[in-house]
Length: 494
Ligand SMILES: Nc1ncnc2c1ncn2[C@@H]1O[C@H](COP(=O)(O)OP(=O)(O)O)[C@@H](O)[C@H]1O
Ligand SMILES: [Mg+2]
Image (cartoon, rainbow, N blue to C red; front, side):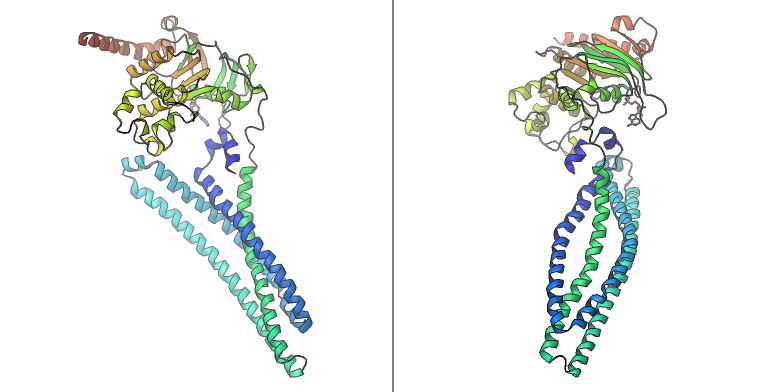
């Protein structure tokens, strides 16, 4: 199940309720496992006891066998009615439990927000509501369970009394002696309790059916690798978008419209645009996280859809705006994609990512454990760990998706200059809304509301009417003056 979940596409993971998924992977799997292991054993035990018990009892007193088994249709009927009622309740309980897990999980991962808004009361009441609903659902189910088991027990005891009556009658008749009666009652016990146990079996079968349905819902989702390309290539780094259009399923309009551009291997290209203009989506399409609807994306002249997804993804080093760090050491977080890496290489990567100085200030250096999701690091530090992480491998394509947004402009500049000095050739795509980050690129692609507005260098674009010039007028001049000031300051100091 875990492997299958890993293989499901980005769309699934974007829309899934994590709590519900956790519930399925834990409780539901456990329910099915329990049934298959424990109850199946019970079932074998039950069949064997019934068989030998009935065989022996038939020799002593056949009527007692018929009375013992006579209850079976009743148990069958009661179980079916019970099962129909309880089934819906179990589904309901599972859903409520999933919601509770979600509430807890969201609360824990959003702890800072909850604290910052002093929202603990609301969070508690949210949990209390779910808890109450859970208790109510359980009580409702337990009422039905109690009724069912109560009547089952009453039936079994009636049955036993009936058999004792038969025994007394037989002894009076002289057809059975005391010893046979003692033996027969033992054997009847061997029949009645397993028959009653059938009810439990049916009950657990019901529960595990509910669970296995929930598991099948996930198994039925197609793996994203079912629809994969076949070719594997060593990417050089030519990337071309030809009239690519893309829209999300749940939105009526296309997000990207007729996007065309060409990036040559080894170039540094900036994609600049306002937030929401579709910059990250372009990267998602390039990594085949989503399927584009129209047009064609070519990597080294190969249509993207003919290439194996893993082949493409493993050769693109992507740094996301909100990087995910594991609760491991800084070293392990950098070396995550390449366990065999040596210290020297990690150090090199950290230096390029302007992280080395920060690490030097940590008491335990590279062995500093990053807290859950890296809470002990600042946003900028996290981004730089993520940058170092992709630099320890020689990816032919490097992509920075707003990856420098949380570092200051100076550090941003330092990182970009260090990148240029790296000794292997790679295509670099820098996505940004900050003009100073874009301006030295070989090529700047200006994205405006999902369309490529223009492509050019800083010098050509800043003299042309359009979004780039507007942005330049707002951000660029300020930053440039600021940088000049800083440089002047440095010179004074030296
Ligand atoms: N999974 C999704 N489903 C529907 N709309 C989405 C989804 N992801 C992003 N969007 C929308 O697509 C638009 C572009 O997103 P994005 O490519 O991330 O923009 P950018 O990176 O330029 O800020 C946004 O308006 C966003 O709301
Ligand atoms: Mg983005």
